[in-house]
Amino acid sequence: MPYKPIESYGVIGDLHSVALVSNDGSIDWCCLPHFDSPSVFASILDERKGGFFRIATRHESSRRQLYQPDTNILITRFLSHEGVGEVIDFMPIAPNGAPKEHHEILRIVQSVRGTLPCRLDCRPAYDYARSEHRVFVRKGGAVFECPGATFALQSPVPLRRNGSGVYARFTLEPGQRMVFAFRQGRRRNILEKRTDGEEALRQTTRFWRMWLSKGRYEGRWREMVERSALALKLLTFEPTGAIVAAPTSSLPEEIGGVRNWDYRYTWIRDAAFTIYAFLRLGYQDEAANFMHWLETRVQEKEALTGPLQIMYRIDGTPEIPEVELPHLEGYRGSGPVRIGNAAAEQLQLDIYGELIDSVYLYDKWVTPVSYDLWIRIRRMLRWVARHWESPDEGIWEVRSARRQFVYSKMQCWVALDRGLRLAFKRGLPNNREWLRSTRDRIYESVMKNGWNPRRKTFVQYYGADALDASNLLMPLVRFISPSDPRMLATLDRTMEDLVSDSLVYRYEIGRGAGDGLSGSEGTFSVCTFWLVEALARAGRIDDARLIFEKMLTYANPLGLYAEQIGPSGQALGNFPQAFTHLGLISAAFSLNRLLR
Image 1 (cartoon, one colour):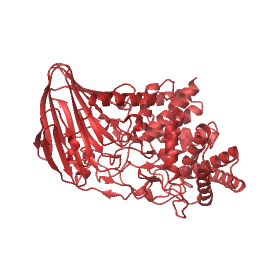
Image 2 (cartoon, helix red, strand yellow; image 1 turned 30 degrees about the vertical axis):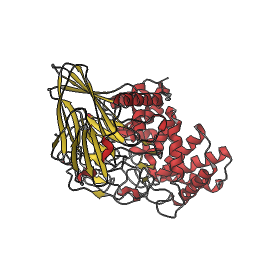
Image 3 (spheres, helix red, strand yellow; image 1 turned 45 degrees about the vertical axis):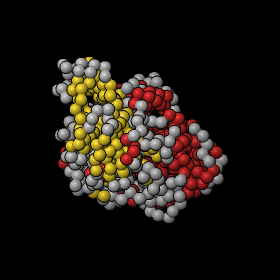
Image 4 (spheres, helix red, strand yellow; image 1 turned 120 degrees about the horizontal axis):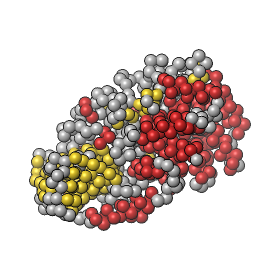
């Protein structure tokens, strides 16, 4: 099982976790029961040890993947002279939000044309391949018992043991369908309860189509926007309203490099931007659920990181220790493999601007925020007003020295500006004069210290020469006019020094910028969508549209994006990434509106 390209995967999920399915019918990543639970299948991080569950035809065939229209139900097709086979993969979602007894992956295998010999190989490797398990082959399937967890594979065909896994060889007649179910539970009798695969398929199809029908985007790029919305929905954790940045860990930003991080947590920044995307699309329930999750996170504490950490586990706990797993080689030898994330302890001031901007929009478009939430927001505003001059690690989570990042200062301005607007609109109690004067001081500080008159551009941090793509957000958050000469000059400099054939790097290397890590990385996909919006708002519509259309060609065949794009157009980094898909949604909205 050689490593497949990251872009060769589709994703399915049940709003608790996801599974990555390659176009050869193999599930190579899945954590159960939740996004940040230990992995059950992880061959994407180690092809020999990680574990996988593959169903495919035994004929040499070409392969195609597609989603059942308007759903997150994945169809993998095997096409050959002998026949055509399909594997329909999905994770059932209970109707009307009913509690789930267990979490499972259903795989419906069918012959569309011809008599097809098929193969099944299932080899779990629980807890990132750190836990051994016992295998019990029984009538109707197999049970895998691990310390602290039990899994079962229900099978309509006899299974045989093969080391730590099981396998089967079977033949499908034309039109025949078989249902296989991989399930997580706590007892051996989890094998006994049968799942009606056809009914589960109907219910899950109905759920996704009902959810998608609530959207209100009707622009030129509806198919890509709706696929991005479905991907974002997959990254929401239904029990708490938390939103994960990506469902994978340690997929590399550089093949063979060390930039391998765990993204299975809720970043305040990413979640706030995602809420903005959901609101634009008309999905208000997701915004409301996240606001409920947020209310329990915001507490006053006199610490360097302020009232909030930059990220939390999906259940809201703040402890996310970073651990390396040296027994796994990493995707194509890209080690170390990490779980947890030490960046949780960083100071990133920008999260307050992004969050309070989302609260402001929620209050405007969904429902007025409660007084109790306002008290917590007011505490954040006062904390920002006292600490905005502090250096921090910034949006890119540098693991080197803290700096006076321009983007962080700009988002502190956003936090106070939106807080003042919210208080004025609602007549809420606030220390307005102090916050207003502090907001204005931040603005003057950015214009004086964040602008490099020699290079005629906004730079990454005070006194720097290096550009940073995050400054493209300045007109998007209404910090500066999109046609201001300083912004236009920054756009020109960005196009010259950060853009490679429409793709945008996060920042310049070699002008004092750096993140304290060795190696390089690909272009950062969300930055390209930021460039599209900035160009469009500056009146450069043709440039914006061409770059947007080019960027759409870098999605995988299913319309999904990883975090970054490599030099030959390959996907790099964790996949699929919420940040990229919300950037696509925002750019499509802005560009479509201006094209009208």
